Length: 314
Image (cartoon, rainbow, N blue to C red):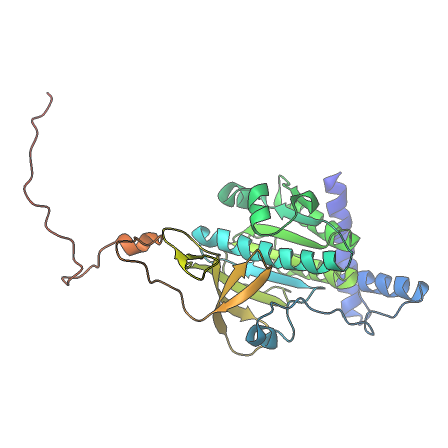
């Protein structure tokens, strides 16, 4: 059945290519226009879909209001070890969108589609972790297709159905079967259905795509957890902090910044600089801080001292 669906999608892609060469609207967009006119609603060009703001003034200004909700937004991690940060940012954005829609009385579910290779490397979403990010597990669906082609087909159908608040598609690296053509098909369907697709790319390089926005995501050191009286809880880890670089947008210049996610308030907070100050005797949670400097300075490792040689057992 999946093979028939893939053949049908290839046929749709060819029709869209022919329509674009002939200067006509793509069939998916034309169908959406006809449906809008039949229902007496405004056409797609006449309607405006409000973006999803981060709630951070300088970032929303650079993004012209926030994340587009009828296009592809890509969260890219360059290294495998940073895949959790990219997934975490996607979950935080989805939680913010879910809260806004729930306040308006719309309770559509979210769909997370995990590529088989990406799932093996980074694991599956964890229900208690979803709650920590203020997501509702009862409105969170997870799909794990066996092949990338099946995952792509599912992503296109899910976005086009408009049955989900957002579709999160996780893929590892830069696979050959997910290039500009496939990205274009996803973008057309998101635009026609007026639904966002969040692409989480693990350990991937920059490449040409139809994403309206691409953010490079890295983890940043977290501060100590704050107590109600304003003090810090020693030995604790606070809210997650993301180091973001705006790689693709309408903003002509790269923009790098730090954002903290507060799941209790469901909001992002700007961070001026990472808080690396620890109480006396408190070790940092950052593993790299335990390594000595590679120079003959004050932080060089101490001599090993006397050695005791044991006799061989044989």
